[in-house]
Image (cartoon, rainbow, N blue to C red; front, side):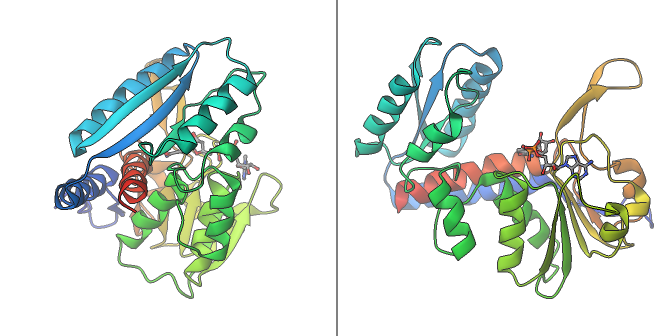
Length: 289
Ligand code: NAD
């Protein structure tokens, strides 16, 4: 079993890659049963290399589960109105059922304004404020993918969240806050914290579920964690490794925390692949709605 602990005292691993593969398999079946084409339309502005690579990878990820991928491009010099106009055209195109806008947008463009123009029914990243509001109200909607991934990973442990004490370290609009709200919907008791929260380690130590989403490499240490707690690491940070080469680490000191937590998600191989799977699920939900 892939998530078995390697020694008696180490936490169980929450294997995001394996969970995401299960999600992908179920999406393949849903698409096959529906017998209708499922497509993701994405808008890419400019020639940012990382965004271009991400878009290429996304095309092959979609193809693997049977989702068609259509990339719309605008030049780096596109104005806010050009971008807004293209989003509005895609909104009214009936062939477009699932839509996202790649970031970053040019510096002069207000990203939130563009995101708020994406039709809420097509907004598969859940970035339109209407969708974020729907999360609060518990209405059926497209939920931000990283928050969905985090909840799925907690639920994969079998823990019942109702009545549990949870802490979310980090409260950004697109990551920390939606996670906190999804947790609140399960009737857990939820602490939303930020860089000004006093005595955060002591607060975390009282919690059954700890979500790290602050973007500070390896901030959460073993003495922040209650023995047996579920620890989900959302962070993705590039730091210098012991040999000077860049490595990817999370917001949790994995090696130390693994010895005290009951369950822990690794970085890489944790929330990252599940976030991709949740995006694909949102695409299928939007397309087959
Ligand atoms: P952000 O910078 O927008 O927000 C960070 C939040 O953490 C803020 O609320 C801030 O107050 C809080 N914070 C910062 N330092 C803190 C400290 N020392 N103690 C407590 N709180 C602190 O970041 P973000 O966009 O929410 O991303 C957070 C992390 O999640 C980053 O590492 C990012 O790379 C990662 N991320 C991962 C995924 C994924 O799919 N796994 C997706 C998005 C973001």
